[in-house]
Image (cartoon, rainbow, N blue to C red; front, top):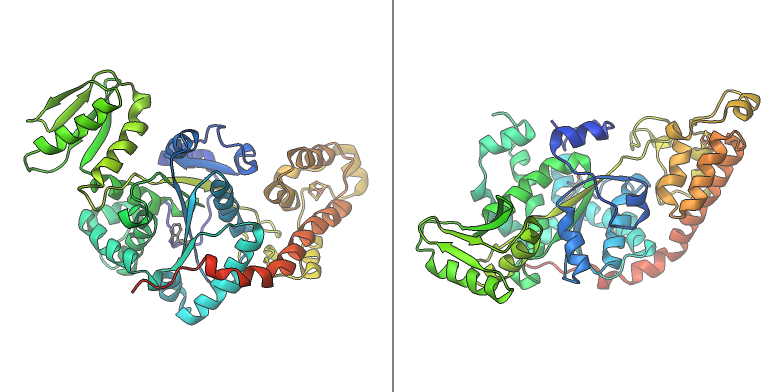
Length: 430
Ligand code: TRP
Ligand code: SF4
């Protein structure tokens, strides 16, 4: 069971794919994190591919915990957010200030300050364009929606997903619903209506993703399914389905589909369809449905990124200060940490020359692999290491120079980025 509240980490990505139904991304998205399989898994990513290919509006959404400092490891979701924004996504970011208050006792004022100075300023310096960043504690839409969503789940489901017991804190009931609302509220009609929505997260968040995808489906009137290689649409509810069936058939016929209705079974069978039509039909019907349903959500999609290894070999964790590089570290501080990192190198220079190093277990190599988008360069580092022509000392110096250049850029842009906050932070809605 994956537990979003434990500090355990998950390295066995193959197992996660086999046992949790996470998919391996195809190679449609040409971004280094995909090319290098740093994004190792996804759910529903085909919706985003469809939206991009067909130039349909889509959303990208993620959240940040305003605790501690932003470090290299939690930069990865934002790298993806910026990438999806460059493909046309409307971006939303939730500052999980309620969550950090509840789980870590961080006051809302402190959370605000940390979010702005440690996280959002860096996002802007990294290239995030204007978008909608909000604080959970100030967003009336997400608060209301989490309440509404709660009506479509129950304790048995939450127990099964999260391993909750009768003595679990109600926080573990509330926070998944708030997170689902964070993501799904971006599809409310006043914000643009139903849209494919990509959520880049660490795999520890997968239970939340599964729950919000199921909730999204349960709120739909039109449920689009693949049956015997064709598309069927089922109308939820127990009212007279005639109007809803006719409305859907009218839309589908307009797109060239031939439909049979069965009013008794509340079903529409799309005769000249194939499984590939599912995404199109689902999105078109969601948009149509939003005229009569305030909560016509398209199941959100997710990408799961690998966890970067800490510089000391284990987890990148603020409880081991030298295991991570904060984006607010000075250049000399970062350099010192990199110089003291463990490596995949041999004991002696002679051995290294003879047998080569092992970049596959080297956190210094990961600094290149996770934070440099130049494939040829990163491949060269890998080959030189394996081939015994790269020595750990100079390799660390080079990595430290690269990371320092990035930190320097972030530092230099900080004030300018802070000056642009008005184009990012949305005002409290209540
Ligand atoms: N719970 C997430 C974390 O611990 C933060 C978060 C809050 C979030 N709302 C979200 C992530 C919505 C993705 C989407 O990091
Ligand atoms: Fe790691 Fe570089 Fe040493 Fe290779 S040469 S083991 S990549 S530090």
